Image 1: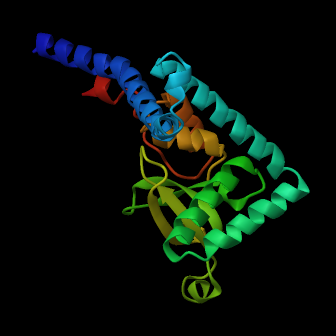
Image 2: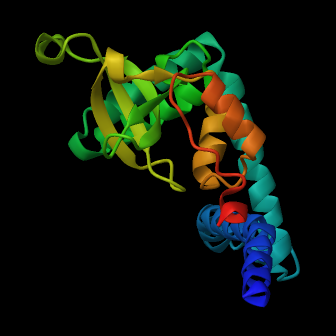
Length: 226
């Protein structure tokens, strides 16, 4: 019995040791695959490998650096009046395309929320979802429409991302009384979601519980008590 308990504890300790490494490797593979999806077509279309002694890796590196410089240049341009006018024009053009407009607008709002501290999307909250007694991390995006508040009272639009893919999720219309404010940054909340909670230690969970009136369970010694 004691030997079985020791093996079980050792296995759990090993999982907690290996899990961050596995998540990091998976995330890096996804990132490399995502970048390759942009880089490889450009390398093939420009036949850049011919100018790098047919060394594909060098051609990919040059293309990646060029893309970084282009994105940086666009970011610099976006901070100028002519760039703001140009990007606003692109927003209007994409807004005219039915399906593309929904995706483009959603991604634009998310990127603005991560960049602009004054955006309502910066408000991290906890809501009871998908059932009472179970809390999910969400982001307040705006006040709910007046037609909704006429039924529910004062309410907010809360986006609850999925984990670990934070680009997907559900939009909830939650009464104000059921929205629990949490004093944590969006970056930390997204890290919590993307790492499925593995980046948060018990001390972090305790601080999270102190910032809200929600009674979060102590998960640090759960295995030790069994």
